[in-house]
Length: 270
Image 1: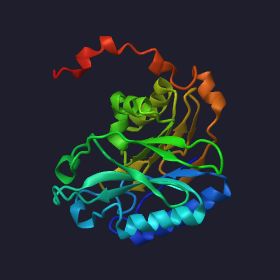
Image 2: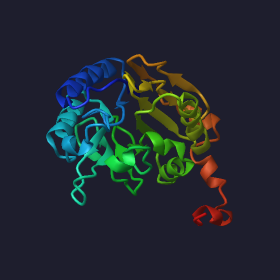
Image 3: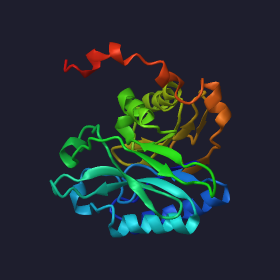
Image 4: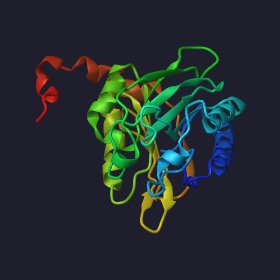
């Protein structure tokens, strides 16, 4: 699988789709069956010009074009986009589109933990679905969970996805300075503590007031990690290995060792 560390053009879905097309072509040539793109990648991440003007439904023109790209390249994708919210048109969702390699829409995840100015721009989601992607002609589907940027900083999010059966957690992100250390720790920590792979695709973009630093990566449950480096656009590809899962104690080993009967305090509002 791969993570695409890129900077999207804000308000220019056409340019971002063209960039995604090139990346998926390179990913297919390198043998990747799934690529994760950054947060809000379809329309670009920016809160200054209100996101509601750029929002699309999961069946809109941009998301449909993404599905066509996946089918054409034979590579599944998870990509951030700004999704319309019929219940509150002024506050769209910050979402991730999950598409199988044949172009089938597997589903949508909506960011649950917002950050800073996002509280004014977006409505939070409230569910942690897990999606089945058929990445090979034969064999079982790969179970994919998704979360977005700030979500990965909450251990409960990754744990709920793992409890839902996720084998890989895809994380579209638009993380910025000075949070490089936090992102690095969360990337590896969430993989180890849940016996899963975590693939985080962060934005790489330098703006007058912000630096989206990149440092994307794919972390294995054994603590191994492949990184994209600082700020530069890059596609990183890594093989998902059963041996890495076995080295971590086996899929679900931490889940089996849990003692939920002692965790009541987690559900109390402090």
